[in-house]
Structure formats: structure tokens, C-alpha cells
Length: 386
Image (cartoon, rainbow, N blue to C red; front, side, top):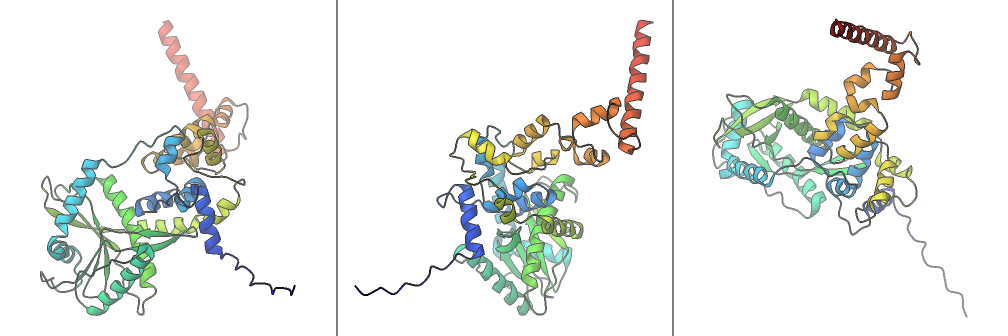
């Protein structure tokens, strides 16, 4: 028989394709959908860049809520259905009539051109197939709006941001393009603004979230010539006092933007973390709890009390941190004061004088505190005996 000519060699997978396949395996296979990375998750990730566990799970799109339940440590936070519905109703009111009220508030707080005329502002259609298509459509709409020289409201645009080597698609409530060409991120929240001020913790969380959006907008602006200005003040829109009427405040996010940019740059690439895992590791929540626990423990975590309000796996990580006597379970500030002492056992031994360098300021402070405690207890015992 005549020899058959060899067929074309198979095309090796590209680096991006191989990474997507690997991340799908970590989730449990191609039939398990990836959970999208939103700005809230990215802000929490940027606040704790040393946690490889969260970086990998978020990068792979693992459902951390389901994973925590499978581990026996269900998540203790989330938004109620009532709050979700109330927030949607308030956002719809703010954006009614082509965003006339929202643009009026934007002009009143941030300026950027003549006062917007109701009905004359643009609200482009941002619909497209898939997040990549929507991100491309948003970039085109931003360019066209900047060139138009008028007021434009982008309702739920889609922005892309590379995070530790994997793409994250982000959807802010709105982005406003001013007649002067500047871009403003708009955050719409349902918590009240009473007498012009709101809860500081909630405002801080909104500012960190808005900083992630501003960072993604910078990536879009960098591809335009000349690059438009991304305003470092974001517009926070909330209900006024105890009504459902909208009011707004301009929040300076330069500090949050700088921190977020620096912290996201510090994240270890997801593919590097995945490469260090044992063969066959998966976070498929359909697997037995013991197998899932081993998989999770194979990825180093950096727990801190702040994780309780930001990560679905916080209860699981807190339990492990306490079992191992990690100082980080007491808080980052305490951990920073103790230098090279990283476990509760080391701290107690240093305070008791059985270990530790006496010239170490942390050890000396602990021993002084232990001596003062002993004196106080002795004094109390003497007073009781008398």
C-alpha cells in the first residue's frame, strides 16, 4: 500500500487557552460555570494581596459560598433579598428619564461643562454578545462620547481589568462623560445620606469599590489619543435623609486608587499558584468534604479579622488560624507589633522568659507586660487576703 502522507501536526494550546483549561479543572470541569470577579471582590482582594488562596479561587471563578458550605463553614454575610430589591428600585429612580436627575447631580457636584438639558443627553446602547463584546462596545461608546462634546450617560457599562494574569469583567452602576471630555464613575447605594453625610464604613467600602472601576477606566483611556481625564472624584448617590429622593456627594478616591493599583500589582499570578498544587487538585463542591478540605489547605492563606466582612471562606480560615496559633488571627496591627513572633505559643514563651532574644524590642515589651501583670495580680491577692 502506498504510504499515507502525515497530516498536519496538532496546534499546541496557547498559554491563555491552557490557563483557562487549568482553571476550569480547578472549578470541577467545563460544566461548572465560573463566578465572575466583581469590584467588591477585587477591592477585598486588593486589601489582602498576600492571600494566595483567595487569589486562586477568585481567579478560577470558584463559587466560594458553595465551597464554604461544603467545608462545613458556611458564609455569614450577604445582601438580603429585600435590600437587593430596594437598591434596584432606587437605582431605577435615579436613572429615570434618560438619567436627567443623575446628570443634574453630576453637574452640581463636579461640573465639567454647561448644565445638562433634559432629553438632550446621550444614553448609548451597550448591548453586545458576552462580556468581551460588551467591554468592546463600552470602549467604543466612551470614545464616541468623548468626541461628541456633550453629556453622555453609560448605564451599566462593562470594563475589563487584568488581575493576576486572568481577565476580570466589571460592571459599574454608571459612567458619566462630561462635555469637557472627563469621565466620572458613579456609585449608586441604597444606604441613606443624612444631613449630607453617610455611614463612614459604608462610604469607605463604596470608595474602594469605585477605585477598582476607575482603575479599569484608566486602561480604556490609555488606548485613546489623547487620553481622556479620569476624574479622581467619584459621584456617590444615596437616598436623602429618610426619603427615596436621590442626593449625591463627590468622594475623592485618589488614596484608594493608589492602594488598589499597588496591591493588585503585588498579587502572585494565578498560573504560578496553580502550578504549585498537587496533581488532580480540584475545588469541585461535589467532592467529599475531606477531599475539598485537603485541596483548600494546599493553597496558603493569609487570614485577618477583616476577612469576616469580605470573604466567604473567612470562618474556615479563622478556625485554621486559631488551631495553628497564628498571630494574624488577632489582627494585622498586633501582628506588625510583634516582629518575628508569628504564633501565640512563641508570644507566651517570650513573655515567660523561656525563649526569645531579650534585645528584641517586642520580646522586651512582652516581658515587661508579663511582669506588670504579675505585680497587679499579686497586689490584688494581697488586698483580698487582708
